[in-house]
Every structure is written in structure tokens, then in C-alpha cells.
Length: 367
Image (cartoon, rainbow, N blue to C red; front, side, top):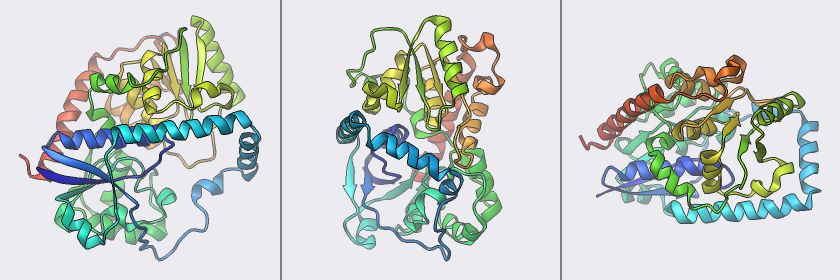
């Protein structure tokens, strides 16, 4: 039985992160493997230049950041629910994800596992990861390095990072990414072709995700419209949400909204449960789109409303892959709001799953 170690972003306060970590683990276990996620991976920057502040923070109003921070720390109820949320996320991880600490030397870690898989999430985003060469498996033997659907999160690598990115990517023999923009980046930097594969969350069946969702006690009594927005919610968007809810007389549940704190603390299982039972789901989140597709839900995708550099490539890729571009609010017809035909997208999903399995079979030598 092979031993595989996952290297990914470890964010114990992010739904997409926890669920993609779990999904990649379960997917890799299908290949007769023992799978763990490595924690405490040492930082090893190879960048000759380091930005003092990320592009993300440059474009977000400092005033807006301060305003949001003050609102939260002065809200005693928020502090209570924040602690509860963190506890719930940690319990979800302990219950579902096997972790091992990177506590030995790189040589010892390399000898301990047969393969190292980096992915998914935005682990190759220079604005988030600040140039950790170990995110490109620098510590591992070359023949053990595999990337499974990692995301750059941006459409172009900053010029000061390009040489280092080129070198690190060239050191990975089995290359895949999560979106078309990532494939283009790799081609431009290295001249190599790479595979655009499914996010690992899409490799897990709806039935298995339902089992995970059922771990949650969250069961709203009324029919509801669910929202999950990572960006700001403008007055205009709030009006849109209210109008859609009013049309079907739905309660509005806003995850991550300070005005809806009773749902703020739900763990990733609760997140799945809320999506699965909703009448319609409104989001600007990539994984919000993913689980809408998995559960065959009515959903609407909105553009992110904040100053963060555009991350729409990953959403554009998944909507294009499944021929669901009409689920974008900007191009949606009113009559399509409550009608979702998944007959075509479910067939596409099966084909894409086989494509991803083929890649991993080749990478692990299990064909």
C-alpha cells in the first residue's frame, strides 16, 4: 500500500479549504493508498524579491478594513460565535482529515512517503503564500512530485516572480491545475502542457457528501434562500437578494454575515447541509458553485464586490466546463432563476471524473 502525503493550504476557518482537503484525501485513498496531510511545513522562500504588501491589500481600502475590524471586535456576540466556529472547524478536521506533522528533516520526510501531492486550493498564489518553495515540493525527490489541481488564483504571475516560478514548476513531472488560466501560466513560463482537472471536491459523489452533511445538526425549519459571499455585499445586491427571496416567500440565511450569527459558527458539514437543503443558493464563492453542481441546486453566481484582484478565472472555468455560464447573475434570464437542468452537466461531470482518475493513475503508476 502506497503512502501519500498531501501538501495544501491549512485554513481552519474556511469551508472550501477544509472540504477540498478532505476530498483530496478521500480521492487518493481510492488508489490503494494511506493518505495524510502534512502540517507545519517549513517556509523556504526562493524569491529574490519580496513584496512588502500583497496586491490584495494594496487594492482594498484601509478604511474599509479598519471599519470591518472595529465592527467585529466590538461585537461581543461575534467574538462568542467566532470561538464556537473555530472549535467546530477543528472538530470537523479531527473527525475527517488525517494529519501528520512535518517534524523531521526533509530527507526523513522524503523517505517516509512514496508520493507527495500538492493541491488543491490557491497554494500557488504568490499573493497568499509569499513564495514557499515547499509548496512546489522542493523537499521531495523529483519522481515523487505530483500536482493535483492547484490554483494560482490569478491570471498572471508578477514579473519579479516568473523566473523562480518557472524553475519550481519545471521540477514537477506530473503537472495539473484547476483552471484554464493556470494552464496558460505554465505554458507561458515553461513551454510545458498541463492538465486542467476537477477540483477534488467534484471527485466525491453527492451521496458521500450527503453523509458528511448529515454530521451537522443544522436543520432550518422554514424554506430558505441561502447566501455565501466572500466579498462585500452592496446595498444593490442586498436589494436583489431580498427581491428573489420575496418572490417565493423564503427566509434569508446569510452565512458569514454579522447579522446572521446563529449560522456563522456552522462547521463545513453544516455548510454542506445548508446548501443541500436550500431552495436557491446565491454566492461569489468557487466552492459555492462546486457544491451547487454536486447537489444539483438552483444557484446564482455574482461577481466579487471588493478590491481583491480578480479571481474569477476559477469560477469561469468551472461554469464553462459544465456549460452553466447562464448561472451568472449578469447574464441570467429571469425565467432561468428557478429552473436548473443538470442532465448535461451530470454527464460532463462523469467524463471529467474519468479524466482526473486517468491522470492520477498515470502519476501513481497504478495503470
